[in-house]
Length: 365
Image (tube, rainbow, N blue to C red):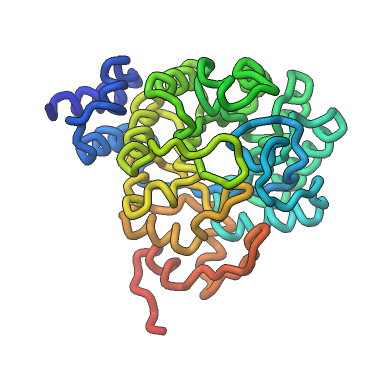
């Protein structure tokens, strides 16, 4: 049995994916031992990323008011979830939130806009924001703005956008079950436009929406074929008022198996434990760091997530290292870092967290 885990790891180390039979075995076979599977997934993760963990923050710069009917999203036209709706935030607000994200230690700041896709004028406005953020702060910038075409991708690329996020979310077969106002192929065209214009595509999926294991495999291998370098793995957050609800399939083990599968199919990609990890992984949350090398902190657009402080503590406790930006490396030598969470209250990065990251004993309080 352990030879099978070793073969999975060896294939990934050689940049070869598991066979379809092995991939289904990872997700479904009752005799799969979780810890050997996570170790197999860890080996290519270590090869390409060491023990570093990238941390990213989402900023919902435009919320709600969306004409699309994505059933999992509380911003869609069919959701009755009681969210706060607002048009694009001001330039000053967006820049201030980018600075706070940089000082909190994140690798990448992602601006998210609701809606089907930006107009040409809005694309130009986003391009200006990308230029200014990158000129001011030592962080990468990602934009998630819905469907875009070749012209809009070129404008964003010329502004220096590092990544464009557009999740496939589920397989082509299952896609009509979660959305009817646009298609799986619409999403594929957006990713191809980004890649064609030199923007790294960021694309993943959502587990827990009634998909089969075969659907999960289809997305995993499609992302490999597209050579997507950044893959967020989301676990459906059940929100009252959304048409698509939690299908009850997501145990902590199922989530970890999916992360391990994604790493073994896409060994070189940044694998991110994304939306819903806190609620679905529960006490096994730290184990995501074996297959995944990236996390979101603070929240997921309309739902809250773990704050920076406990997330950094988890990373350090598990023997990993926060891959912070240069501004963060400077800031963490200060005794206390205050920053405002976008859309929330103040949080404090305790001095003992920074001390633990430097490998020294914390001072007595």
